[in-house]
Image 1 (cartoon, rainbow, N blue to C red):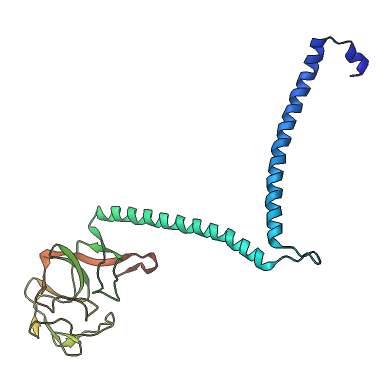
Image 2 (tube, one colour):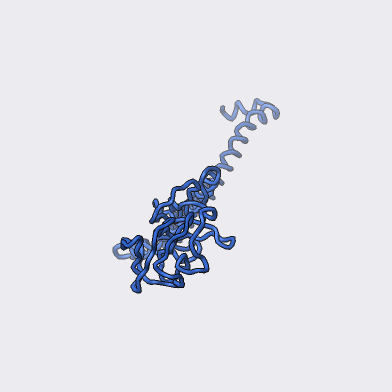
Length: 245
């Protein structure tokens, strides 16, 4: 609209004409301020990074070491987040599996002590089957003085156990093949050998023969079936050692 045409309009008409333009101008100003603020922040961040990179004026070669440090810092933040996420996911899975298994014919136990090394170590989590048919070589969990101990079945009812000075174990006159034992030793043995296992009981020993206190010692003796919690069948934790037992 030309100036001479504008002069013909009254004050109200002029205000109504310029009001939308004024509002649009205000909106553009606000948008420009937001963009300017973002640009300032970006420029500041880029300026700090460029300064840190120490560009050389002659060839503008980037300091590789500084770039690597910056990338490592960024990657470390991502790695920490991933580790935390994995730990939380692992704990949730373990808790869910524990509740699920405990609801059926299984129990979940945490190993304490080192008498079953190297097969099982302290703080490992295992699954025990409550319905079992124990045989020689099976790992068993049983109650002793209100605690649960974990040992390996060596002989069952009526079998005769003998152990020589070198720690070799014989059952009914035949030497056992025990690849799971790393330190053959007669251990803390105060029973008379050869020894016949009483009816309805099991002769058990730990895989760490030197440190384990088990059926070789009269303090524990042979284990009655009524004290047995179950057969150890699975290692649940740590995840990198999950396996059948």
